[in-house]
Length: 292
Image (tube, rainbow, N blue to C red; front, side, top):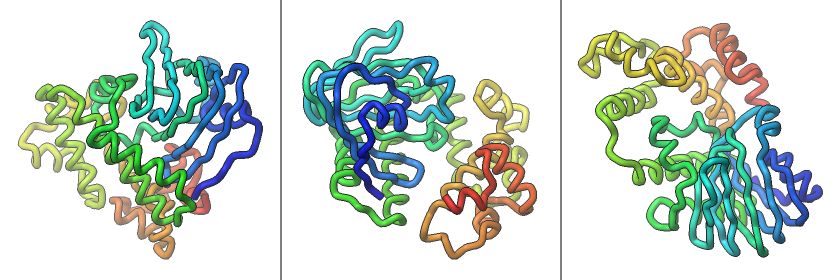
């Protein structure tokens, strides 16, 4: 789905990105790609600020990708200086941290916002690529071309949009992995465990003991791999299942399946448990999520 946003520029920036706008004007066009959103933006010289206050009031803090199409944008983050982004370059940055984007002349760019939970990346890998300037080669070139096509050439059928959103996430993950240094042994093993979990979410018996046996380690060692992560191993399995259920509920190709059939395919056996866990994670029930 694509749409031109007709509200005043400052209102658009506040609503879409939680940005405060200095003097200036612009226009934006957006496309919903499942849980990913793509934007094509253009404007006059100005400053866009993401403040700590805006972050505190935000419901989500996605990872953001900005590919400059014309002009130049200057990204400034506290204690990290400035990064100039020109045509044919793109940068990833974290909306959970304050930042400023400055344009000294007319500019245009393509932007993509991605819920951080969708990126199957170790924390170290994500940290290494945030605010790194990429040139449009390899995965970066394919990613920006796909985003430009999604926003400029729309409208896109809803089922195709969901698939395109998944493709952009995969490309972004590939871009990050291509950039990173070789993983430390624990990071590599953790990535292997996460990959196995994602491939076997539909197995209701997937759990710590089964994972430990599959990877030839003790349960204690497996728990240690996740002790410094945002989630415990059990929480990781549950949350990845819930994320998959939510994505499936938004997939028009699965509209004919019942909620419980979708959930069962992701490893849930009990509808009451699913509803409680889903609401605890997302603040809404699966039925509400399906209605959009």
